[in-house]
Length: 175
Image 1 (cartoon, rainbow, N blue to C red):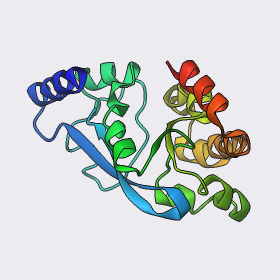
Image 2 (image 1 turned 30 degrees about the horizontal axis):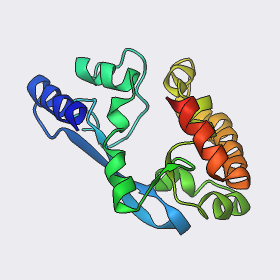
Image 3 (image 1 turned 90 degrees about the horizontal axis):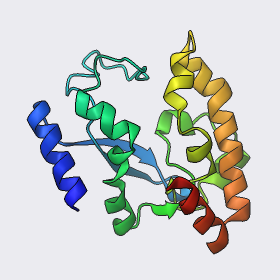
């Protein structure tokens, strides 16, 4: 709680707007829910209406935002989603609806059959996803055709191995 309070204050002091950013994600059994993160970009970051990947030196990301992204503090508000029951600590990361629509049917059913989590095999393997995408001439295509299928395979692996031991190992690797 103290880290979340200080983070909120720093975000508010650096730039106008809310401290939290909300986005719709797809959860258990395909049910949409709202996920919260600490806001790391200016409030007008998507003023053109098109979401786009943040690159390493993206001028939309604030100074505080760079820090909280690097140390993953931006993800802390998701603990509220865990308390609410929309997420668990460990499970496949929830994705935005436009990418879930691209999941092959069998994998979609499998990955969405468990509560989404804050961490999983894919989160650890692709913790530096932004750097990979920044190196691409077409980040959207790279995500859809290369990263998303690899993440889905790792998420399916989690579903196959889900259990207390797996969860404890993943939490340890995340920390």
